[in-house]
Length: 109
Length: 101
Image 1 (tube, helix red, strand yellow):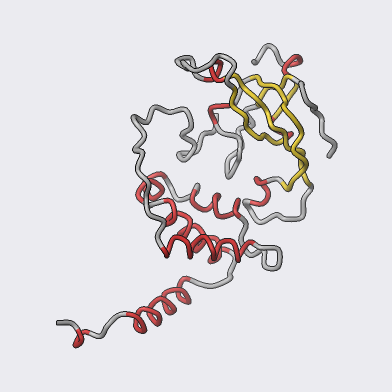
Image 2 (image 1 turned 45 degrees about the vertical axis):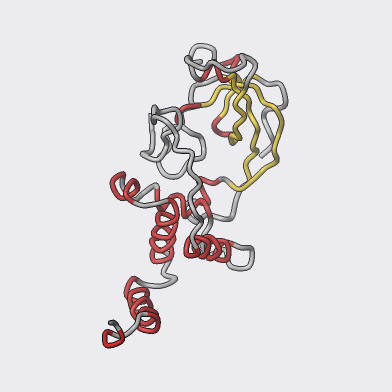
């Protein structure tokens, strides 16, 4: 029988924490970008492809990441796999955006 | 692909042993349920998961299972059912499959 580490329906899990978590801005952005990548005009990444991505993380990484962090990391994996961009492209872009947004060292008190 | 099942059919969920992304959870495999209705036909998510978007489409069914059959310690109303959507290739007629069900 094949059972993925994510396929936990029916397992004992203790009590459910009934706490409403905030939906953070970056999490909404992750979901918005996923919708744009998968819409009818682009079809660069399907919902099922993204799911396959985080179901291939390995159990430790999967359990270490939050719901939206999993989706973000899986989207990156799939887009790199499909040659939409490379890891180097991504790192370069992250560095450029970080340089724009983070205050320079001398500004800190 | 024409739908092989219709409302009221007793079906058993197969264990296909497929790796990769599948939408049929482990806890429902080998269980017998009843087709509630046909949901239409859709691209197979197992294909979409590896970037195959050319089809073919696969019939999808909403299938009902009695909760107290799935969960031996279920204490709710005995008529409570779990409804779950399952693709055609994961199902077989239960009455032809009684040995495994």
